[in-house]
Structure formats: C-alpha cells, structure tokens
Length: 179
Image (cartoon, rainbow, N blue to C red; front, side):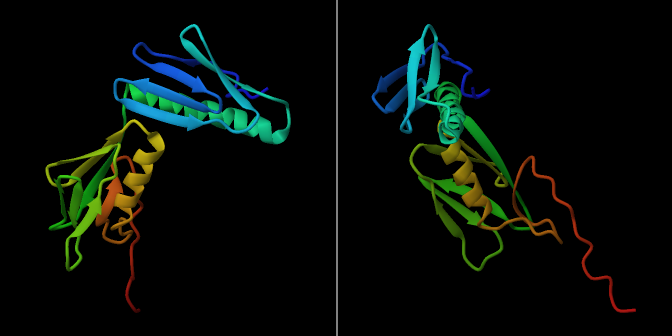
C-alpha cells in the first residue's frame, strides 16, 4: 500500500469536508477549494480525519492514491492557513507596485510590465522590492509566483532580476579578457 496514500489527513477545527461522488469540497476560514477524484479513488471522512482509499493495487492506482492524498492534504492545509511565496527584486531602479488587481513591475524594460492578479490570490508589495503572493490553493500560488519571476529572471552575471527569497544563485565570473 502507498506510504503517503494510507496516511489519514487530520481535519483542523473550522474545516468542513463535503464528498459528492467524485468531488471533494473543502471549506475553511480562508476559502473554499474543490478537488476531483480520479477513477478508482474514493475519499471518506472519519472522526476529525479524511481518508483516501483505492480500488486495486495496479501501478496507476498506487500512483494516483498518493497523489490524491497529497492534493487533498494541501487543500485542507490551505483553507486553514494560506500558502505564501515571497519574491525579491534586485536591481537599480527596479520596483513593484500593486494597483487594484494589477501588479506593475518596473524591471529594466522601456515600459512598465502589468501583471494581472488572478482571483483567489493576493499580492502584497513591501518596500517596493519584496513581493508576497498568498492564497489557499498551493498550486495557484506557486504558478503565479513563477509567472512573476519569469518577467525578469535573475541574471547569473549581475544578479539583477526577480528571484525567490530563498533562492540561491551562483554568480558567474564572465569574460576574463584576452591574454
């Protein structure tokens, strides 16, 4: 049996789970998420826990068992405490600003880049150089952060650009000159 899939998901107080056939709806203080169950995977609730079961021991069912359990655990955790991803802007004159549902980035192009913030995600800017992306859907938070970083990825020679706060960059030396 799957080591991840067989673990029950503890339900925190304030988190409600509704199972409707092949859909699991999870409601909490920070939002509501729905997760579709693959064919052959069932979910059931116990006393303050959510358990994921599979139909048989085929390789596909074993893989989907652990995946589904991990996705449901992320949803339960996200509606209780939101996920966050922090980005940092490095470079002279580089800055960010939030106006409504738009993130405006000045990152060395001839024009400011406007990034539309999707529903379900909140973006905050501190000191014009630190961007924090938060939301209850872990996948959406990570994808939005990756899309913001892709506007101006960090340069390996000068270390300018947008990077994750915990990202470690190795600086390249560049040309050494003709001898």
